Length: 216
Image (tube, rainbow, N blue to C red):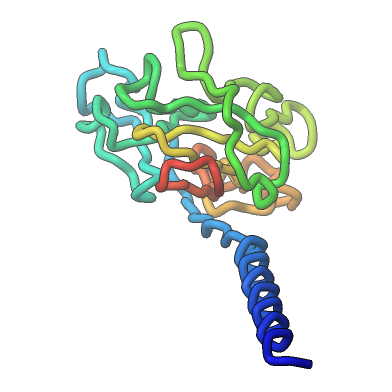
């Protein structure tokens, strides 16, 4: 085998090696964003501060997903908050509810398996409808009525809220509990209204994509 042939084989080997390396780079999985947890967020502060003519009303708890913290009522007319909680009602900071770019929709699926926000289908709060529907079976929860456990608010499994934050970033959110301490709702303690933990306390997990893309 002459020198020219040896050189040709060496170049071919280097070319194949470079291609293989590029393929490896192309198939490297993108790391999923880490979910954050919000625990026992009160959903009816009963506050009387602020201007009651502004939306949201002052008894809503304003919450920043980006900062994972409650926002003061005085900042209700700002883009510092992303969602507002009062009872089973959840507002987003957009439309009639705030000055932000907030919109939302309900997506059926497993939280971890929703790796990209939908491109379309979002709605903002309006005079006639909310981006996150309220009412038993219409959005994120069921009301059990005379069922077991009785008179309880139970999150519907697989109902994931995908939303745009006040600054237009994409987020996904799964409500885990409506009761203080995220209790086991299948126990006799919970079934008995006298021993049931207080309601209007949200526990939820969520992911915010801060780079502006729809990928989680």
